[in-house]
Image (cartoon, rainbow, N blue to C red):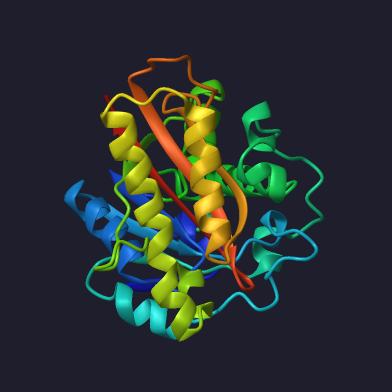
Amino acid sequence: MEIITTATSLRARLRDEGAIAFVPTMGNLHEGHLDLVRLARQRGGCVVASIFVNPLQFGANEDFDTYPRTLDADCARLEGLANVVFAPSAREMYPEKQTLFVEPPPIADELCGAFRPGHFRGMATVVLKLFNLVQPQVAIFGKKDYQQLAIIRQMVAQFNLPVEIVGAETSRAADGLALSSRNQYLSIAHRTEAAFLYQTLAGMRQALQEGATDYPALERQAAQALAARGWQVDYVAVRKQADLALPECGESNLVILAAARLGQTRLIDNLEVCI
Ligand code: PAF
């Protein structure tokens, strides 16, 4: 496995590779990330993982400065799974001030976007830059970041980018908690409580599968149940899988999405529901 830190060396290393499967990450890798890399390996060809904590996608009051940077441990975990790790500095990714951005669609201002203004614009911009540098045939993203995945799919379609986007199922702990780098911020008590987010979504999924169609009522009840246990709820929402728009009554391909805080830790999760 080679660790590459500059765009020039990356291009030189990948120039003669036929097929490239790409997994972009912000590092601090856990089993969920490794599952994405394993999926990339199944696609064959050269597997490239990037590790870059992208300043453009963090708001002023977010955890950019404290986001865990664990490059040595990350590379050790990727050994034997990835062929190339691209770990650029911020100066390498942004040698000049970034004044051109990917302007994401209106859905980027809803759900997580309503609570993280500019996040998806910064995310889409760095993903486009990474695609241009790596030029993969396939790129793997976790469904845990469902809204991110939807925006990337739209970017790839609308900009005719020659890359296949694969959405990988969310990796979960035994109690259902979606694996996330931010889980390590949780206190022991909050880590136990954190599984309730998944349980809440699973309860909503069951209600939908049993015929419930009053989506706003389901969202309200779930938000109240979380708040009653001390969660600060950003949103619980039932949306259409295809474009995250509000569903008509009786829509068959739904996704339930939620974001809520336990103490200082913001957790997100979602569950697809096919009826
Ligand atoms: O999901 C992430 O880790 C990041 O948003 C991504 C896709 C690597 C872009 O910085």
